[in-house]
Length: 501
Picture 1: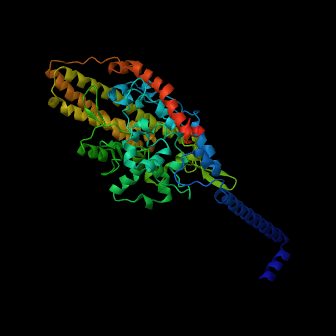
Picture 2: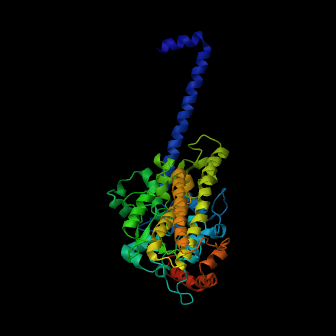
């Protein structure tokens, strides 16, 4: 064979040069591959074999993890940035009640009517919760603590530590203020990672328990499934069950809105009784995971982290970007790795879905607010509790559907078709409730209900009877007297890092 090759080269010298070039290219590529393998092995040893600190057990201090995993830690710290706004949302502070005052009426009698702000990055999980008017002002101006310790559950890696120290049930039973000097570090590394293996892990028992009731073992989940399940520990619908306020996911019958509604109805559960309509209402939390499962990406096996934590490369290391936020800030990394289309086109597709969903949402908020106000007028006119029950049932159903569709901020992208279906049903039931209420009002000789001026947050809050001046004064007192005491106690115990401030 070599003789034939030599004769071929002798007859055609250009073939020899071509062969030489091919051999040189192959050698060069093999050299690059070998260098890459060597570099990756070296960096892997540096990353996992030469750790600067040993992390044992539940470690809530994110900066300690950062000593071993600086790339991930540096990107996580970027969750404190507030520099992005898409067409409809972003990571900047926004008073949602100010821009959509009908929501004040929809939540009348519930803490969300006091304060509802757009979510910011994980860095602010504790900061925003402490400052929110929804958490009240325990210890300030004689105010009692009305919130359970369960409210801290999704806000800090200190939570699994406290569950371990106190026991899960005792943690849930505690008052919110009793844990104020313990839950002090913002959501971070220890919430999702096993410190020894760095594998993704579930640290909140409610998720494990919910799947167990379905006959499923979360421990058998694939790595790709875990890249969504660690998010599903918190970004889900939940409620506080019983007097012990035990955190529970209502998934026993399934993941759809109707499945969870049936669960709540059979349990005769309500989050609160509406201050105007007296309907027993359900408050959706943030069913991101459930709606995501019903959308195109979820059905195709895409994980939350694929879009919200896209991979980055540095040298020979590939790692997840822990700057968890809207994928629309970085379309190239989050979208264009799969979708071969321009950034302009991809954004236009998203905004088109969002715009149509929000159009229906705004209609629902107007008509459902009218239904609550009409119900109040009917009760004021002497309509009995039995007579108004059918209308209240429709209001409850409409409120649940509206809240389910809006509480998940990514719903209009995750599952636009399902979200439009849900909100369309909310609008339908809102109008049906109005029809039933008008029948009752007509029977009392009332043909028209004058709608109050709720065009601003302040006007809406005054209409439902909130004393916002007192609420704000109490919160200011809490922030300047009670909270500093929590922080000082945490410092003295060595539980607080700079991030926790």
